[in-house]
Length: 332
Image (tube, rainbow, N blue to C red; front, side, top):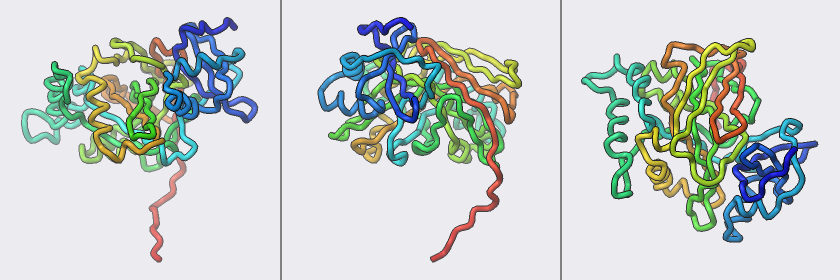
């Protein structure tokens, strides 16, 4: 394996080998080398913040031997030893074209000419990128869960027995660590599959919150630095080894109705999201859904999401959990 070009570290990967965790730094070719003394991205980021260094510079100073990524278990690019201190949330209707599928879904429930979804989308188109660089329009926001909902690369999504659907959402997520002063620090970006229950959402728009309480997956790579303004990738569904649905997806600010800093402001403006030491994974939305085209994923299907400059894809299967019946509450 060729050595990493030390001046061109592009991303970080967390992995497990022989029961021990490690972090690898990747160059633009995907060649990887171990970051010595680092067992997690979060720990490395905390060291970088304490030293007043960038994350890439901290990793570059500690490069070790080559890592064969095909021979180790790849993990989510970020996690927290206490899953309750990692929050997964997101914003919707943020990408150009993203209102079309949602509008179709909710048209029947609208009392006027425009659905709430279309009105929300137009607010972003008109005010999500204010010319003065100030605070723009407030986006749709949703909560998905804490760190326990993140599915590692290659592992299956498990939709609840009561789920009406398990559908992909190819997206980019921002990855953040709250520093000791309570300031959000962006560590980088990951591609992911936000994964939702679109049939439940279609039943009643007020069930959107329910539809989002599902697992999510991130690709193995934490992309350092800025997100490309025009990011282009592919989302596909594979069934029994055959691609049964595939479509390009777009992200990056060129293809969005909001600036990323506007989405960040409207998440982190809430003080409860600025607790020192916490990790935040924030999905930025998508305009590409197989569900919008009438396609229904099945148990056993495999979702794949890939996009340059990420060299490693997001790949996860789909299964359904056993029925636990009605949840019973104990009384003391």
